[in-house]
Image (cartoon, rainbow, N blue to C red):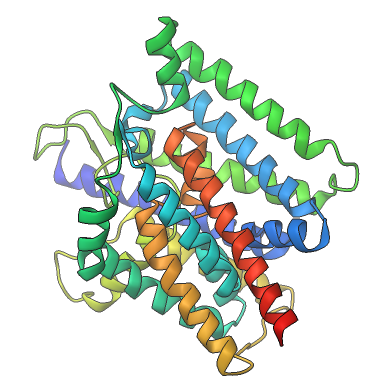
Length: 370
């Protein structure tokens, strides 16, 4: 492969990812797809509509990712989610902090991008604070705490941590067969729960869930199949073109927000190049903005008072550190990670929900106290 071919492939990966992220932003804006909103509706009002939407999106993402793996289109071993290190403390601590923070900030990292696109200056502040905190957590002072204090509390497995790989080692059944059978079985169960309510089955709810889940699987295909090189011309090793980690990636929005700020600040540096995560950040925000303008829903929004400002800033900081520590957000772990059926992603998702519930209880306590 020549350098020109490599550049063309990189453009294809980044362009395809941008298009999928753009669709994600537009659809999330139009259908009100929101993980924090799903938890809040269920806990505060007993309304499970958006939670069903989220479950159906997870079902679609799992089905898509596992079928891609089972048919050999992608290799789940190339994802960092499925590695043999089960970072239990990181998943639990990071997940709880992220979940609590997203309640204070009025939405998770992906929702922050969607709301920023609709004119929310509050979300722009959250974006900046989250990005800086995430960067400090990746490479700065907080990285020392994360790496030296939290990450050592982990379990080292004999092999991959995703459920199909675990069962393949235990039973001797073909891994490809388990990807398909386990993936479809889990997906069908989640879909059945989501679709059990007639009130849920509206065009907007179905579109939001099917599209978001499908987009996550679509980025897996772009990154893990279209962008895969069995032998990179420079290193002669397997590579995934356009990804920050050098491994197969799909949507996630905490570390990529930090990388976006880094890219913007070092734009004139010739060695500073766009990556899949950065173009996804731009795609979601621009998709949401276009949808908001087209429907007349673009509105400037600012903070109501000092307490509102403080809540959003603290929430953004918690999301920045928590998302990096947990290796993902509600999308990065709750959809992308869970679609691999990795144990760590399931632990992170449970911790994020627990943190969100705690955050909602805290806000209710503040209201009752005042």
